[in-house]
Image (cartoon, rainbow, N blue to C red; front, side):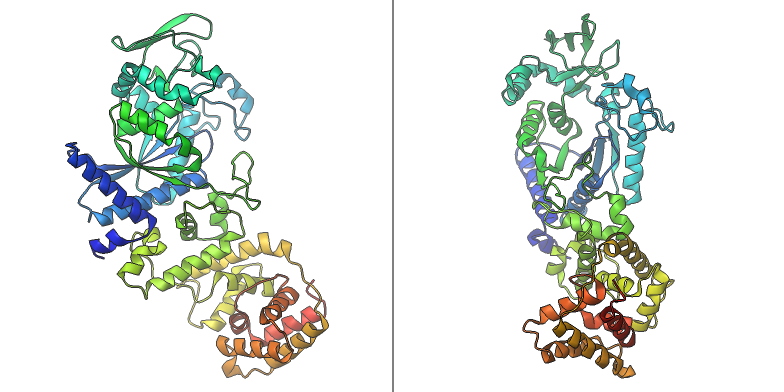
Length: 532
């Protein structure tokens, strides 16, 4: 594709890539010399719990922007994605899911990297969770550079900016204090010292700050006055100043975050500037909602985990869900999975016929970095689900019998992606469709029409048995012959009486794969009340 194509693409990753390019141009005009420093894309992670769908969303979306930037600049500007773990945060509460949680009670408020690993596999709780994060990201093949906040603080990587924060203490307080309530203002400090006696992260006021000496003075938990250097991991910053300091220290050029950060973003930017940095291009995305429209929360358990999604659908469909309208609040619950899977393959199928401009706007470019696979399944996921339903299939081998009727040359070994999709369909049906099936008895009009349809299906010539279009036309005609004013009501009746659900795939295609004789038998069983 040409650079002009990328420069005019309306896809949001290209829009953000162009914003970064504009930022670099502004820096250049200001006389800022970047030297060989790469463009830095950053994501942050709180390791108090396991990585989740939000973690995946930030990394996959940021990767999409990074890929768009590389394409836009023809790879002439180096880039890197860094994932920072806030593992120096104090452990506020013991997760109930860890082994022997009572044993961790004495470590509350200590940095997560100082808390013993209850799983016994790593040097600390923070290290264990960091390893889980890296395994999670590696499993998706993300290219990133991992950074531990503990290492950054204790190695001296942050020292220069911590000393500068000490010099600019009053300026930072002037930014922070107006954002706080009266009670908190009285004791607030951007510096959180680590108690030399208890090892806990302390939220205490400063008795004095000495920029020349590079120290802070405060009262320890036992009331003893303590003076500590702000360098070498003796302190950390409160999370809002830490956010801005991290941007300055790591030279971050792009970061996205959820809407819950939006009000604080100007604070991060101002602190970054106070510390001598340039605030990055920022992209705010909406948070996911559950089926009832409530914000998804890990503590509530009202969302879908990445593992949940991947049990029922390919990873590419999850990437598509993350790509679509990130600035619009979207409901994330299990019912969206089949629709998203079919949308992914529809986009993949359309790619073959698209010109450069359309491809640069397609989610497929961003899911596959411009190099998508060619495979598109011959049947939709929705259709596979209905085949499972009609055949009451307990494993994907049963499905393959129907798939091969429609596509005789297809087989599991040569079509692993389709085989995987069949497995997903069985799993999704068993867990979500089957338990909610609700067959109903037909009305007199519907019974007469279904009886007629079964008779016509039994008489379909073998040569026309797999002609989905001809079968669809016949089904339409039956509805017309039985005076359905709205043919949608006719198809809805077929689904509700014969499949136990209110909607389904194009029924002619279903019949072509399931078989006219088998569909006629399904209808007879439904009319006889044998399916409920």
